[in-house]
Length: 202
Image: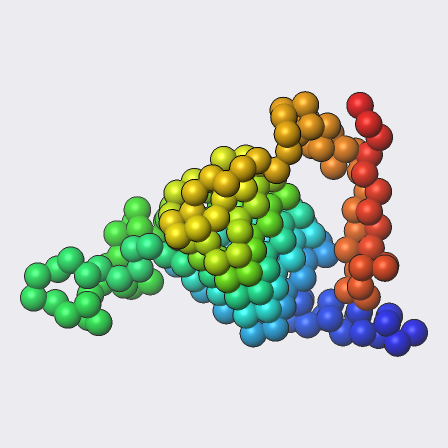
């Protein structure tokens, strides 16, 4: 009973964190949002089904977060062009801002896309204009300034390819087929209450 109440309270807290943020335009099912997160976007942030957003995560750019995404604590998705520092005679503090009425549309529309089944490790920073490909892994502390290919593992400053999540395309195909045919359910009550049932081997 105690775990049921705890789980319900955590689920309600995630819902409340999303509902009170005007920048979050869509939230999927079974989404977890940790404590002390900050969300702001010039256009929109969307969170797909069963994504997990850890504690103290900052998303301050347009963002589309896919299904089954795991974003660790203290990750930041931020704009690379938020402040115009190149105007002669204007201090950077007073430069054009991405959220201002005079922001260039190409800058205000820029964002981050995190495709399905991605893990972004603790303290990583992802700049706007980046697409993190399906199934990829971003190491803790990485600075992602360029697109990440599907199923790549990246790390470092700036992030570089360190390896692949699976050995070959056959394993990737099998992985995707088993996810597509599987049954996965998250519970705020904890891991012991999750449903993790991959589909059959094909």
